[in-house]
Image 1 (cartoon, chains in turn orange, green):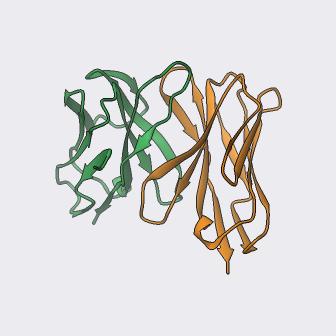
Image 2 (cartoon, rainbow over the protein chains, first blue to last red):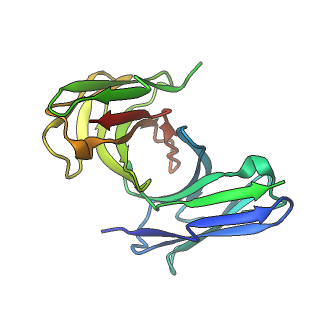
Length: 111
Length: 114
């Protein structure tokens, strides 16, 4: 059964820093890997989706990498801003529809 | 304009009651889901429906019964509510396009059982 682990559980950085969030998964037979953002009291917003055949995806200041063989993904956030403060969730998709989530990294970017 | 909507947003009820949460998506997606996020913020799949048919049913007590009257709606009915049912319930939808499958989430329903 797939297990997804995210490290660190919480991270606090000053504005402007570049940072890396880590995600690891136990079963490399994934369809894709997704990174989501969850704001307090809100739903999830999809940030990036990396297909199993891809190595990375970029969107603005965000870059996500995938190393399927080692069961790892990283989310790189460049020049962090206070508006980036949220919980970031990593999820793997196995075949049709099923997402397995990590517990998330709670990020706080202070001005 | 809301892509995936849920009602109610908050639900406070007594143990033993029966309650329903409604979900609607206006994205034309074929697949809809219910997830539960517990007090430790762990998000887990409960059910998945494709074109009104159940395709995933994780280990969920049969007090929970999803119902899909049409492709755009997936409601969740909970019988005999228990304290442990207190959580945030998220509805989501997706449409498989090639090898891409992004799920779009609703804002969540915060259920508190007293």
